Image 1 (cartoon, helix red, strand yellow):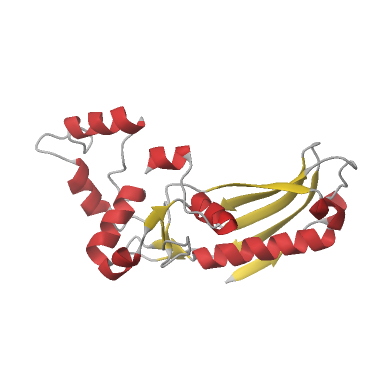
Image 2 (cartoon, rainbow, N blue to C red; image 1 turned 120 degrees about the horizontal axis):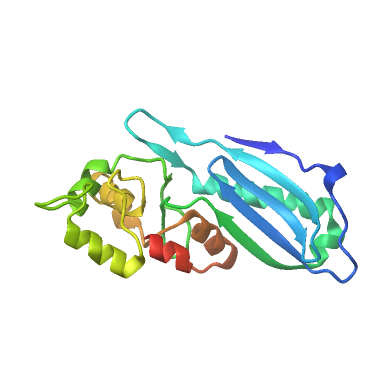
Length: 209
């Protein structure tokens, strides 16, 4: 379910005549916030739409990427209609958001299943087996931990609530979904892909994954 929270006209400002404007998107765990921001500084207007996570006692914590996209586009349409001069000055879209979550997408960047969020721990046992060894320190096999740190500056979670645990869970328990997936991407990369039509990863999400 998506709940709309309208922008506050009283807090909206008008950019200078020559100020470019950016459409800023912040995808939080509770749903996306969308704003028109002047590069001169002022926030021209903003909108928030709730996208409810689906949680269960077995560790499930998912959200619908399609609901994210609908919420983002509806919020952007609301703002551009309310601020046509700012809309005419748009030069870019900037996206940030939650991380450690996994969206399975097809080759066109459209989601083929729900996002497993950073709260989803269903892959915990699979992740613990993957990172462990005959000798364990805090759940990690030392050689494996050093290899991960050398390559990415960190190591995956032993609790399954990150991209490694999510992929292991899908590969083991959702094989049809796993086989239909062309790429596993972070939420912000999913949204960028929907805006651009290109499936790609940012440097931070590549390091995390």
